[in-house]
Amino acid sequence: MSESLLWRPGRIGPMELKNRVIRSATNEHLSEADGQLTTAWMDTLVELAEQEVGLVITGHMSVDRQQRSDRGQTVLDAQTDLGLLYETARRVHAAGGRIVAQLNHGGKKAPENVNGHPPKLPADFSLEELDRIVEQYRYAAMLCRRAGFDGVQIHNAYGYLLASFLNHVDNRRTDGYGGSVENRFRLTGRIIREVRRTCGPDFAILAKVGGNGYGSLHRLLELYQATGVDGVELCTSDFDPKIWASRSFCMEELLRAWEGVDLPISLVGGIFSQKAAEHILEAGVPFVSFSRALLCQPDFIQRLKDGRQDESPCNGCNQCYQSFRRQFVRCIKHTASIPQLKKVFGSSENA
Ligand SMILES: Cc1cc2nc3c(=O)[nH]c(=O)nc-3n(C[C@H](O)[C@H](O)[C@H](O)COP(=O)(O)O)c2cc1C
Image (cartoon, rainbow, N blue to C red; front, side):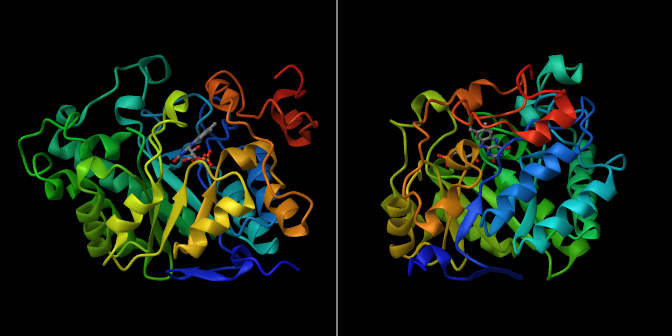
């Protein structure tokens, strides 16, 4: 067996992980039209755990069915099929993995053609609406806890609601939720504290954070730490497929921002080989996260572990991202038939 750092056990807050590998949230686009979970959604997550991914983070799940970012996005609310949620956690655990649900609110990325009303910027929300959003996150996290999930991840990157609050260009509020970085972070902080209050210390709370930090990454990480969050996943690039290659934040920059912050982190973005992952781990980063490499090959990590492969065949064409919103998310290189998709679409060929 390989001596790679990748296979060493690790810990994030209350979660023991069998290795250092995280599947970064990737919208499966496998819900029913109304956001209900499907067995295909479950099977996709279970397959990753069975193929040696230590921690599987679900694609973003909407805490509000009126604020979805697309029609394939799952929803976590009172109508969610708790049986499927429970079964997903049970099967991931049986495979030796851990599972965390990514919670999100579409914000300015909740389009009118999906929700029937225009998307909103931070200044469009009343204080009562902000209280309601905190409650929606709390409720969604409580469902996950009840179903046996190991934790939740609060999505705070890529321009969705919470990232939009952090972004001083989007956030024009003049009250306690706008202006300073502390104010722009206030909604996120309230959500994390409320989830902690409801779900307790043995339920992991993570955050996904844009690596640019809107110019204040170090301060933001300090604010996260003060909320009692268990870990942070830092994106090494903005999420615009066209500029992924040219706009990566460098690892050294992210590590400088992390200095003096006592929080386990993971880096995500552009990691396509065992060598690249080990380089990051050797620099002292405890975890590495993968998205497109696992869309291309759900068994990518198993292949690394077996020594069958040391690099992903994903060439970053981003067709997976282009397929978004029209059909299930998939890799055009992933030509093997995907049996679980038949349950939803009849046949993977005509989906
Ligand atoms: C098809 C697709 C769907 C994605 N969905 C999500 C998502 O639901 N939540 C999220 O935080 N990031 C999402 N991402 C971004 C990835 O998690 C990751 O941050 C990004 O792809 C960079 O990592 P990579 O180079 O390993 O692909 C998605 C990416 C792709 C390609």
